[in-house]
Image (tube, rainbow, N blue to C red):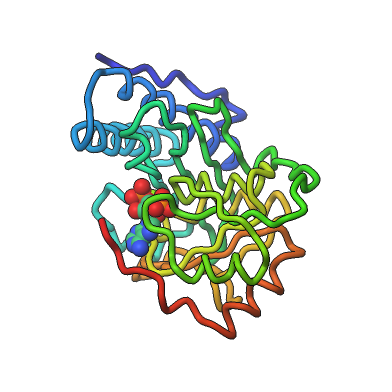
Length: 266
Ligand SMILES: Nc1ncnc2c1ncn2[C@@H]1O[C@H](COP(=O)(O)O)[C@@H](OP(=O)(O)O)[C@H]1O
Ligand SMILES: [Mg+2]
């Protein structure tokens, strides 16, 4: 089967925000197609990772031939460290959930890094028919829950987040994909996503760009800035939350640490 991504309009090609959204949406369509091919388990995971990566690499080579790319599924070309602009992509975030139809908690991440900072980003959630992006930043609705809700990994929730939830009198909302969890804060499905113990730049770059554009608080768990396009792309912790929760979350972590978080389990 030959997938047809279509052709982006000239104004889309001319704008990083719009191109990021178009690319994430196209890769999402490709992933929906792969999901319909009858594969299961590891075969479905591998097919999804590969198909979305290959499509994004082809499209980026076509529309941004001069820019560098850092992809979870590609070889890390360190030329990106000297590049003016780098596209940081996670072709399929929440691979585990992608392989468990009809779950909808998986995403495509496309971010742009330029001059030391994230300048654009898009997170597609194909099963929701939504592509959150910095070109048309989402408006965070008023909070509908008096009790804070903390989005947490469904397969490997860090132990300290359970303690944090007790302190804040919050409830945990388990779901897959780092991008889906950050967008859940944008969508008022959760009020915070707090993670430590392992992750890479592609897991957070695009959703952090979108969350910032939507006015949410973003940082490392020690309150320092999230920094991208580093030599070592391991970026193990992140907070995305409604601004009014940031002080309490940072204070709890400063006091108790994140030590109990479990190491990578695959
Ligand atoms: N401890 C850890 N070490 C490395 N990567 C981690 C991790 N915890 C979560 N991640 C990555 O963050 C993403 C979201 O995970 P989770 O759904 O458990 O919250 C997944 O990305 P991928 O699906 O792209 O591999 C996962 O691999
Ligand atoms: Mg990922």
